[in-house]
Length: 77
Image (cartoon, rainbow, N blue to C red; front, side, top):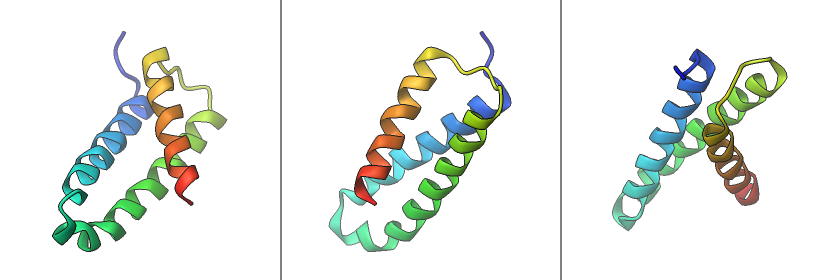
């Protein structure tokens, strides 16, 4: 199944968040990346909200990744 545009956008945001999380493990880079991470998380949560409100078809695998990422973000806030 080909990715829909909203699914593709969500996957891109999740991938960017994961890359920044890996970079943040280096304590010298943590503070510089913190704000970027918060902005990406806000965009991700907004995109998830829009996807949930719409009738965009999302694959089960992507739904699971979204759910895990969303829970992780909301747990920290």
